[in-house]
Length: 481
Image (cartoon, rainbow, N blue to C red; front, side, top):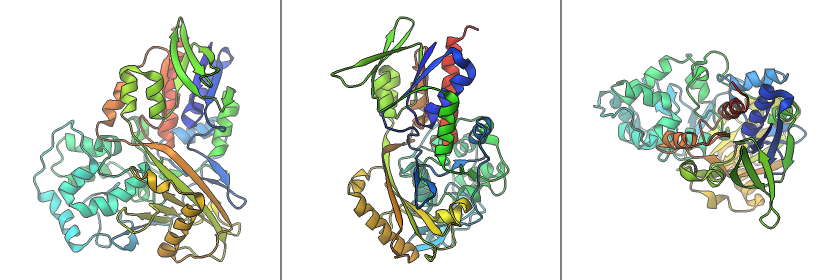
């Protein structure tokens, strides 16, 4: 048997590993990747003598996929953030990130005085008493719902920066059902207000889960994305976030070693064609194409590539998923540089700053400190703002340093810098996203499966889950019952 896996990000590598586990040496697995490295939007670099992730920095530890995979691969346990709390920059000032919210949606326990104006606080307090008209099963833009129920401040100063850190998106364009599905479910069963719906969701979570989830400040996107309902959705207790000691390259290298694929880097897959008994992947330049015949294929690629390769109704559904670009600038400073004793800061879009978030990495993660250097990461780029990133690296670094001076007072010269661009790296979960995903998965022919961040969550655990599910789909079609 031969299976082709298109895409060597964590979704594709998780699929390859699961195929090897299920089918053993009876299958030849060929992994094809356009880049010159594995990992996709997971990437670990050396920053001042220490491995630092410049894509996703963490994973949602209350989902089981990554801890289970690390254990299966014989890797050490994950590490978890320190107790440092996060802040948010909005309305021209920096304030503690308020607890008592569900990804920016206030519960009755929210304390928002430090973030909102008196009028904004009053609007939030009045929401439970206002009549709510809700059509069960409908999907709306989260920003529209928040503005209608709480006013503009809660959307602009809290929800938008929080979700901008996850999706590099704008709250006014993100769909409720794909981004906060539990909130939509609470509304569907009759919650009388948005506050009551948020109370219902948080009541079924561990007491500290919402506050800890909000320690997302500065974390690059792909952390905390929604996923398929299932065992992971009910996992509670213990730390909310985790990271891989040594960076995600430890996990990626272990997946490659265990999957033992034919790994081909720098290869473009141009077409997927049906053939008798299987599929043909057309590779390479149009002037000298190469054919790779396989019995089944896993497509773990961004939505636009998925649209091109699938075609038909499934391809059209994939083509409706838009992408956002972002940049991570990682910097290291001498130990004498003093950062605020917080995990980082999220920045509202209306602030006169270029960054959307800064993670004080050495403070947030104990394993990134203690060697004499202070490390941090700044993230730039929101959906629809790709043009602002089309400047050279020196300009991006200069913008970040100017913002750091405004936010933290740090003006020192960094001793190490890395600029990581993610062009079109983040799928946008807009209104109707779940219907688009159903259109993709429901339109797949036999022998083809899909995986990746465009489907059921942008977080690493969700991507791993889609990769494993895709492998199980194609393996079931290869092995007689």
